[in-house]
Length: 297
Image (tube, rainbow, N blue to C red; front, side, top):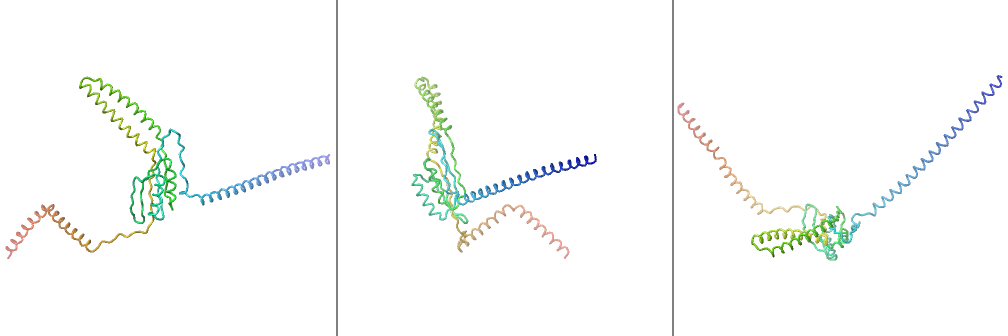
C-alpha cells in the first residue's frame, strides 16, 4: 500500500513538472515573438523617418519661394474674377531691376499706374502699381518676382464678383424700363404740375442708373485688368545726413535770436500785472525804509 502511494505521488509530481515546463516554454516563445515584432516595428519606423527626413531635406534644398509659379484660378465661362497681387522683395541693383521689369511690363502689354521712389536709412526702395490684362497676370507676376534675391511676401487674391455683376445688370435693365415708362408718361402729361412730378422722378431714376453704370464700368475694368502692387528695395550702406555750412548755421542763429527777442516781448505783455504789483510794492518799500533811516539819523 505504501509503495502504491509512493508511485502515485511521484507520478503527480512528474505531471505537474511537465505542465509547468510547457507553459514556461510557450511563454518564452510568445515573449520572443513580441520582442522580434517590436524590433521590426522600430526598424521600419527608423527607415520611414530617415526616408522622410531625406525627402524633406531634398525639398528644402530645391524649393525656392520666389520660383514657385502663381496658380491660375479655374474660371468658368461666365464667371467674373478680380485678380490682385501684393508683393515685396529685395533686389541686388534697384535701377537695373526696375529697367528689366519695365521691359517685362511692355512685353505683356501692361502699364504702370503709379510709381514712387524714396531713400531710407540703409535702403533704396520703389513702390510700383502695375495693371495688366487678366490672362497675362500670373506670367508677368512670376517674371518680375524672379528678379528677387529675397522675397518678403507674395499675396495673390482672386475675388469672385459674378453675383454683384449680374445683380447690377439686372437692376440696370429694370431701371431703364422704368425710365422708358416715365418718358411715355411725360409725353402724355398735360399740366405743368404733372410734368414737374414726372421730371423729378426721371431725375432720381437717372441718377440711380448713372451710379449703377459707374459701378459696372469699375467692375469691368477690374475684371479685364488685374493689379500688381509691388514694393522693391535694395540694401545700401547707411547714408550720413549732410551737415549744414557756416552761413546756414549763422542764418539759423539770427532767426533763433530774433524769435527769442519776440518771445521775451510777448512774455512781458503776459506778465505786466505781476511787474506792476512788484514795481509799486518796491517803490513804497524804499520810501518807507528811507523815512526810518532819516528819523534815526
